[in-house]
Picture 1 (cartoon, helix red, strand yellow):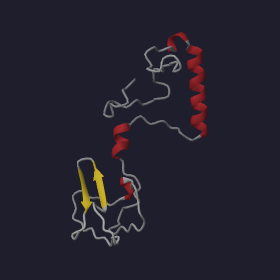
Picture 2: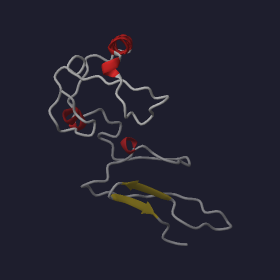
Picture 3: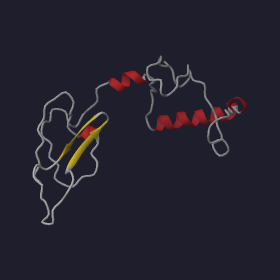
Picture 4: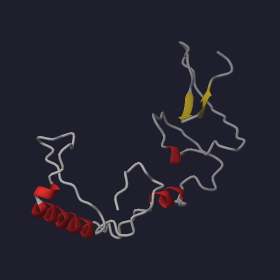
Length: 142
């Protein structure tokens, strides 16, 4: 049972290790993966599968799970759960979405203490940008 990687909501493969058509490509000469060499090299496919199983055991990857849709919506630990105050005290470039406050479907207040150099400053002090939403902090006085 094969499913395209982007088809998250197709039927899950109950045994992805053994119920999968394996492919083999020579990336040195076929970087676009246009020619599947598996049928002509079954021994190499077996060797590579054995190497995968060995590494998967070593790094505790098993059991394999092909239920993509269920894993996408499964609750995960969240460092921001239950918090309503976030203090950022150093210059920051980039903050992962999982480490920032939730902005959807809620009211919130943003406050900041900033120091403007004597020579002045322009532009915004902070912004949070996510797909289809975001906010930007601009000083009231310039």
